[in-house]
Length: 119
Image (cartoon, rainbow, N blue to C red; front, side):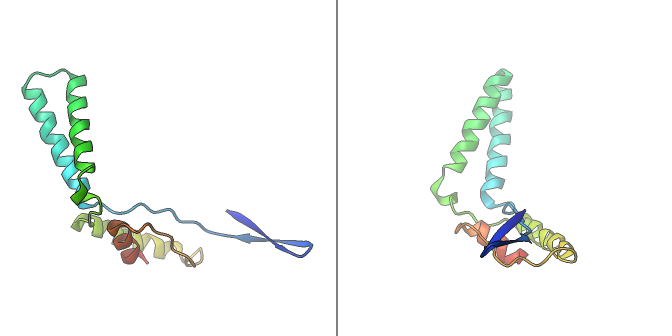
């Protein structure tokens, strides 16, 4: 990304590096996968067609995501490992690019944990 800063009448180009990072796997992601798998097997056992199996699995997945107790879910152990692996990748990128000067993160627990582990 190139940002132009106006300094009076002259323009100076400043190169900025932007990293976009998604949070690591969180507890709700695990529960979502488990319920989707369970409901899929149940629907198949009941003889549902592929469309019905898919619809039931998607509804069950959404139910997990709408659960208030999982709204601010923490990272899973696997998510913590993902963040630490990402930190290694960022550190290798910093050999060529500058270290981030700003970190913007949502206030959710999983995103804060991810940012803390990476930076």
